[in-house]
Image 1 (tube, rainbow, N blue to C red):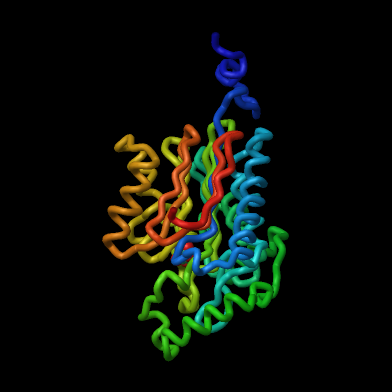
Image 2 (image 1 turned 180 degrees about the vertical axis):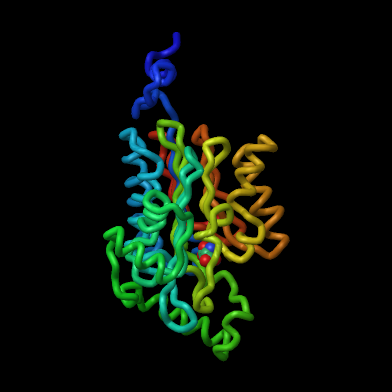
Length: 338
Ligand code: ASP
């Protein structure tokens, strides 16, 4: 027998009313998050560091999961999960953002709503405490999709978002990474001409979710790549490259060598394969990460959730900080390949 909760939205719509904000009792929901991909081996992390990453990933996952389990929206869930990671110095986003070659921090973020295909993004912001909150404000409060630099910061101020001095993002660990990167790169004029290996660029954060109303959302927030040239913008704020969500296919957030993710349009390519080739998230994600990106030299990974709540988290690096939970099932937190 068809449940009333399933019939009600159609009945209300027929009567010219909006569908109610509650979902079918057994509606699926899922969340997945990442904290960056790169050369992360057991030798790189102490037991304490590993435990700290696992605890923070679990906290972020739980924050998003609680919203979904209570019938909240996937948009709220991805923002809640990301903001916990933005506030942690462990990840290359918000508080723990990497340095540019010149010793500053320039942050990028984006968000997409799979129900409406609306999106918001910010690039190169230096004083916004939560770039993902600003990306959402661009989506919801402006007529634009992407704002950059001083214009984005002024918009943040108008929206009453918290602003901080650029030094708020200073951490010793990232500064040491910058010094090592500068040594490798040599003189300043090399900064836009030499690529560093993926040791230097892990920690971007992202979240994807399916809520009980059947809506997908994806979001990504980053400090970019260590020792990047000032003004460099990666894939994270590019809709279709670092972030994509469409209720008709899937939601994706990426992490890795941004230049490749832009050129291969990674997030949208995965969802197009799901949509037009009717591939599963496993087939589509593996094809793009392992068969397309890797041969081209692009390192990194993605998290994917589809409209049925299936989750896949492929990467072609040694590790990717990641966590996921399907419905009220087991919490899955992992760092390394095996
Ligand atoms: N994709 C980010 C960028 O290129 C970096 C990362 O994910 O580690 O800016």
